[in-house]
Image (cartoon, rainbow, N blue to C red; front, side):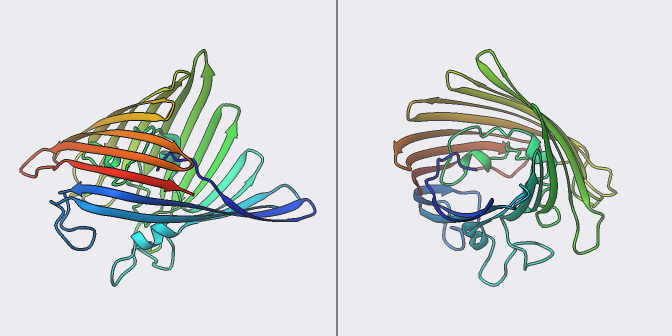
Length: 331
């Protein structure tokens, strides 16, 4: 996720107490990237060479409010639809290609909210990840071998989640499930809770979550995670998270764990950030990695972005460094 302020174009219709709004946001990226860890330049080409990178992203956000105060809405990201489709197939949902990636709908009333579609599980939603600020064209900060986005189980059944959130004072509690439309496995389920508090000179965010999927060979089937994040008044941010993965499946890999740390600092138009993480796996290769990010906000929606990622994977496979440099334009 990129931390960029979006200018918006809105179409609004009002009738009595009810209302509806359609908001269009856009992002365009242009620059140079290098990532030698793939087999081609997106679809063809040699990734060992520096490549020109361009991307355009358009997001439609639709919201409304009923006469009784119930709010509802939907979001769809057109860029993600294209990214998930290859020359002959579309992998929007591994079990149902008619479902669109990065599209979801919600219903909310008071402190309660129900979200359905391509959205985070309760586990992922309540934990803070280590990419605290800034962004890069090639996602260097989230692709190195030490990165854990806490979303691997979100994709287990095609990324279609049903999540309920309830906020009370400084607490937010979430539960979610993801059914397997192929009817091969039982639904996954997750639970999470977060706590946010403003203390003297800082904001403290605590997160705790658990997620479980049906047993299947060669994958972990549960994960327990915790995160501690803080934002200081001087622009400094920091986060530490830890997760424990378990495998009870016959023929699957053994248990594993991950820890990660992230820091970020914003001063005027300049944002600097870094993150580091390690995976410790029983019966599978350990890995670690880090990333560096620098952003400069020129104003008006134009941001200069630089990113660098590196790491190592235990065994004969090497992980090559990645980098990207360019401009992100938000509309």
